[in-house]
Length: 117
Image (cartoon, rainbow, N blue to C red; front, side, top):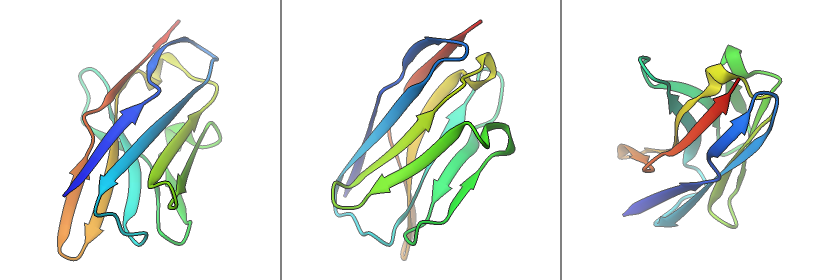
C-alpha cells in the first residue's frame, strides 16, 4: 500500500513563491514515476510536472521556467518549487505516483494553493 501526503500549500500573493512537498510511505520503488497535477476551479485536472526515475522532467507549457520538480528517493519525497506565481496557478495540487507493473496510480489528498492578485 502507498500513501501520499502533500504539504506546503497556502495563500500567496502574485509574484510570490511556494514549495510543495509530498511524503510517500508504504512500498515505494525508486523506478516509480512521480508528478504533480492540479485542478483549478471550473477546469479539468491537468499535469503540471512529472519526473521519471532517471531524472527526466516534463512540464506544462504554462509553468515552464517558473516551476521545478524534484525528488529525493532516499526520503521517498517529491517537491515542487513554484516561483513567480500567478492567479491562474490557483487550484488543488495533487501528488501522483505511477507504478508501471502492475499499472496503478496513487494520489495524495491534495493541497490548496491560492494566488491572489
